[in-house]
Image (cartoon, rainbow, N blue to C red; front, side, top):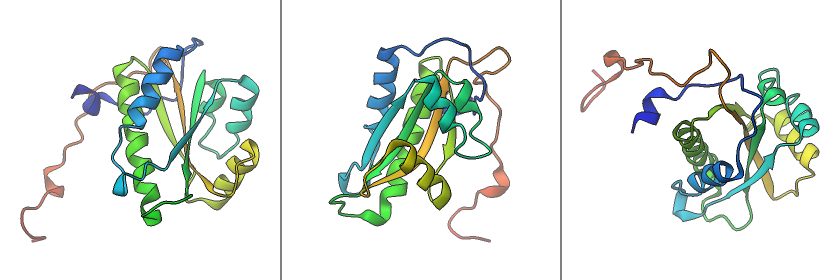
Amino acid sequence: MNAIYIRRSIRSYKEQIVEKEKIDKLLRAAMQAPSAGNQQPWEFIVVQNKNTLEKLSHLSPYAKPVARAPLALVLLANMEGLRFPENWEQDMSAATQNILLEAVELGLGAVWLGVAPNKDRMDYVKKLFNLPEKIKPFCVLAIGYPALGQENKFIDRYDESRVRYEKWS
């Protein structure tokens, strides 16, 4: 699976909309993720409105790419009725990674902007989208067609010194 090896955080995008078909594929990929006890806590807000993207870019000092992106996905966890509520962040991480890999497959670039567990960021997203109490913000993904000079490309990150077999030393 080449997407695993070439995926990079893309923070600059062309002024080109992301087609609805591709948005649907991103969301479908997210919902194929594994989750604890198959609880599937994910909920999503698709953001394309420039005013909302601008507001969302004030989430943190690192969220500036959202203002210039044609698309952001806000990943949320619905805490209602979870069998394993302590695993919601793991579930959401798997869904997020699936989106990032599918974006590469679709010729898109994306960057993961953390929200949880930072209370200020979570509160900002809750207020911006008027979220009910049972919904916890997890992250925001800025997504678009990579701008010139931005690309998903292979950089070898393998470090043999971090691998041990059977025991630590």
